[in-house]
Length: 99
Image (tube, rainbow, N blue to C red; front, side, top):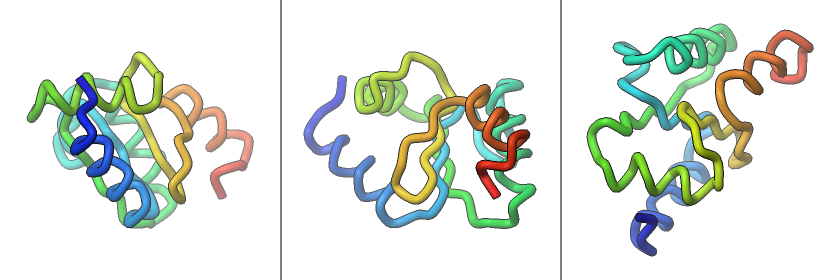
């Protein structure tokens, strides 16, 4: 459930970090292929990535889905804007929109 406190924490993270990913696992140890691919794409740009392991907190795992109204993980934010999941990130990477 998305509490007001969690909403504020998420908003603070996406405001204070250029790239934020809510993912299964961590960027150093992704725990699903989509999370791993998303990290691979983001790292190719050489920008710092702030990761959040949704397995560390069921509240976060459900709350981020409510925050974005997006059912799947990972979820990527760039410059404070919700981009979407791995599929959208990959499409933007391939067509040059991320550069």
